[in-house]
Length: 127
Image (cartoon, rainbow, N blue to C red; front, side, top):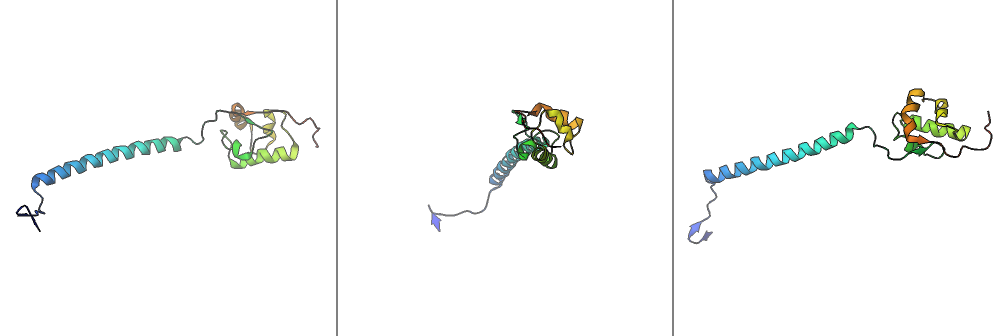
C-alpha cells in the first residue's frame, strides 16, 4: 500500500541498525546491573541464617517455632525444649537448659541473650 506516493520501506538502514544495537546494549546493561543488585541483596539475606531477634522469648511460654529463631537452636532442639517443659514443668532459670537433650553450655550461652524465665511454676516438680 502506498502512502504519500511512496511504498513502505522495510529495509533498515545501517544507521538505524546501529541505533537499535546501541539501545539494546544500554538496556541489557541496565538490566544486568539491576539483576546483580537483586542477587547481592538475596545473597545478603540468605547469608544470614536467622533473622535478628529484637525481643526475648520466655522459656516457660514460648512455642518451639519461636525458639528456632534463637542462635544455636534448630527445630529438633526447639522441640526438645518444649518437650522438656511439658514433662518437667516450668524452667526455674536459663541454666536449666543444660538438662534439655541437645543443649550444652555453649548452646545455652549463645541463646541466653534471647531468652528469659518468667514466673517459675510454684508447684513442686515430680522426680
